[in-house]
Length: 557
Image (cartoon, rainbow, N blue to C red; front, side):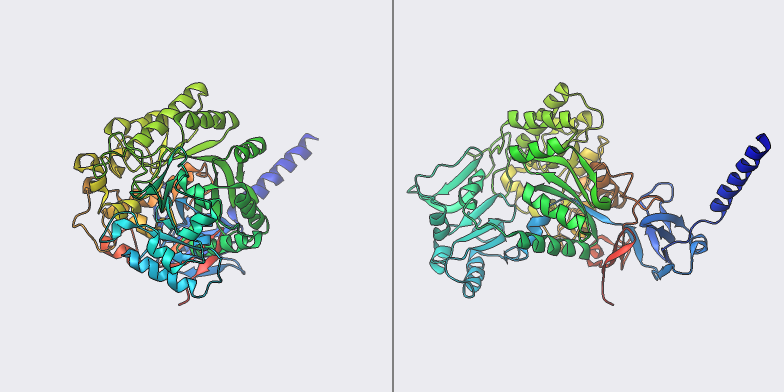
């Protein structure tokens, strides 16, 4: 018996040795590439092999081609650059898709231009049908005051019109929309919201933060099929720009259900880390279900609650410790009470959920940090990875608290490039030193997952990459960068859209780097964004986007 057992053991060992000596052939091999793996053990290689949707090998072309089999596809990258698939650590996937159906106002430079675009759309719109748009920004106009509805109402007397500000924290409604929503001079703004009024107390059409709901409740609801169509359009747009994942910063249950439906059917070509909107019924539903990770072959995660501390700087809703420099009677808005933030955060810890809180102003960030600190005292938790989203303005005393509390500052570098023209007027020069302070935070030992806040900014992640390393706009202004001491290195900027978002989403063992065993998510670029001059980064184009070794986007030659 012992001899038989020994023989069997030797045979088994020989079999294992044979398997190690002759690995399974790859499904895909990429050669002749400049591959930045974001893996410190093999940071820069020339070839990569993929099998069963995972990275099988990274290294030299000579070694990779040993894995070539009869059905292996070999891509000669012709010297092009390969990086891990890019992830937007803060975007709004469904809003991106829904916005593709509406009027795009992001490039407008005057209110007259906005009125003209609405008039053009109304020509082809039946009476009484709502007209929606997004992207206006009064800071880009000659007159930077908030608009009023009168000119808009004159050209759209029979169609309710609602135009969302670029930051998503204010809307402009015409008279027909206010009538449909039963808004009058007697309507009062809810806590955390503001109704702009004229000298006679009449609503001007602008509703800020929580007051937006006074009009938005009257908007027609999208059908289920329209939600599916909008989601698929958003995914295709994201893939086109090299995105393999997005941290979707707050969705209601009905949208998350659509995501699940598409992912289950295998038509959701994105890894979505979905945050649950702050609705008590929805939160309770997911608490009862429990944290969900890597559903449907790693395409959907549902394990984070999205809260709001304050509004936005552009609409003067960001909560500040001291008044706005250009509006001395205004200190911004708290969209949630501090107690609410702490209560939900405490319950999230008890149920194993992460929390991500929107906070832009220095007071908003302090309130969020205080709420987290209180929750963590009640429920001490290792590796909670709580996040604050945006972190645009910080008081110097709060900078070290992120590292001390284990809180991740999830920031969008492109906001700095958009806001730098007018942020000093809002804040005053001294307070601007705490604005978009990436280096100050990085020096404390934290990571900064980077994003776009799409559709607030463009979906292309290279805009945030460029801003992170240059602190400049598309035209390379200002020379040397805006407060250049806060720049990121290229390595940090690459990590900010790969491995750092993976860590912020508890995904670092699955994605974020081209490491053997992880998902084979990668992007082929037509130029090397790690070495070219800053001014050339935005000229880079995505040649192909791969998820699990399968192309989800390929640019026609």
